[in-house]
Image (tube, rainbow, N blue to C red; front, side, top):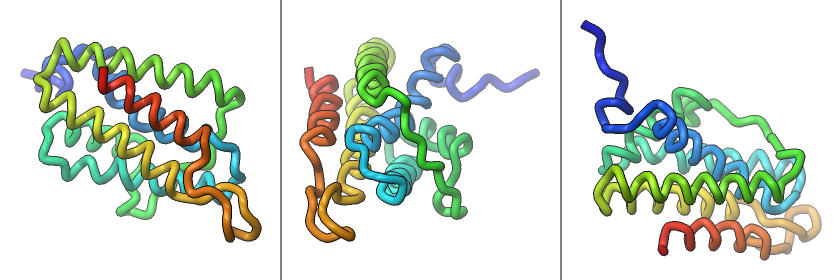
Length: 167
């Protein structure tokens, strides 16, 4: 007898689970892409985002824990020294719009499939990932001095993501 996949045991289809597992990494990438600020800062943002994703494995929430465990197994574990490459979407605005649409889909899915506490923990985790990324490396300034900790574009992405989950 074969064991059911975790997502099936949790009541999700393969497609639904793919949305939930892929979204944290997409949020990380979109938050980083919100402000074009060079490879070094992008690597810092990726490291902060991967750490925020990884921290989800220690969540007291079963949904966040299971999604984080699967995602870390796919993209890398910062505790093992893994790093994400500095990827920049070719069209950052379109990518951000797509991620926000996927966030809306996930929000609707979670309202249908899990209780409010589970949904709230997952969506809070996503906003936390965005927050960690946008505050990881100041943009602007000279030689790392000065600049904005969070730019207007980064703030806008984080706030739009948060607003999706607070309707």
